[in-house]
Length: 261
Image (tube, rainbow, N blue to C red; front, side, top):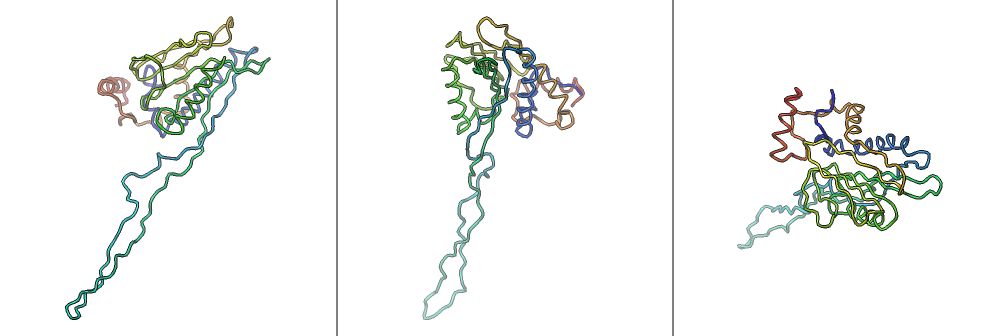
């Protein structure tokens, strides 16, 4: 069964699927771009590695210690009552364990000079919430923006805090940021919503070079088919994270029209 939505599929944002979707999208962009940029450039898959606490695995509302009192049988001796001291028994709790996180991204490199010409990032949930994931990505982002490399930042996640953009009052479900070195501090922001196709965008390279077009819409559709996500997604249920009221009504109509509800 083909991909039911015109652009991004909100069911792919589910944490149970997103890690795989992220990896497949990185490889799909890699496969699509390498033939277009050769022989001057090549695309490489790189990884950012950092340590963080696995806060997602913590249980909420578990007390650190439970105090249980056991009282011995009362004995009456000249009017005095003897009471046993409280006995503290341990309970099992969960600790935030350090986690090694590996996030893949793409680099377009000049074959002759080995220079990194363009960096392509597909944001993960950890990048969009407070913690080491956000800190690690912000550092990498600022380093790129302060260099001679171009940056493409793809955000296909509705949850979380968007990356910093000055004087940006645009509200959208998703976005693609294209920051060309020669235009900074200006950048092109492709803001789009669930109801819309994912916009095509040009891949910035060195000045004067032909810029190939990236068609994420086509790549997402291809991933959906190759990974057989129609076999694992239950469209009778609401997606996680939840949709806004307006998007929920629209998505319900789309899925009914496709015979999925």
